[in-house]
Amino acid sequence: MTLAESVRASGKRLTLQRQLVLDAVQRARHHVTADEITRRVRATYPRIGPSTVYRNLEALEELGYVIHTHLDDRVTRWHRADSHPHGHLVCRTCGGETEVRSAALDAMARRLRADYRFEPDLAHSAIVGVCQRCRARPAPPSATK
Image (tube, helix red, strand yellow):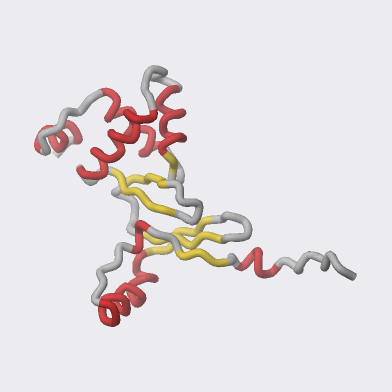
């Protein structure tokens, strides 16, 4: 089923704005914020506003074309839904992000289901810590001597 057919089958319309938003997400090489998507779309369609981008991202997520995630900075980021399922490791020191295949998180998900009767959606969150590179850096000199 094409995008247009899928959108129509859901009772929605495939508007130019919706197509432009989806194209911007699909061209992104990483997770992008709605502000980044707005800037990308405005490069070819200057009249689009942030509220239109947000509405279309939500509609595209309902349709299964994009997924949102929350990393450590509380900013919602978007990526293609057809990318491999993954979680996120975020370094609180350098802000670096590492994608983790969902298989690496399966044991944690099973434990959460068993111990807490909770069904986790680990792709929508981040595990925050300190990356290997930052842990290997020498500690800064003490301010007091």
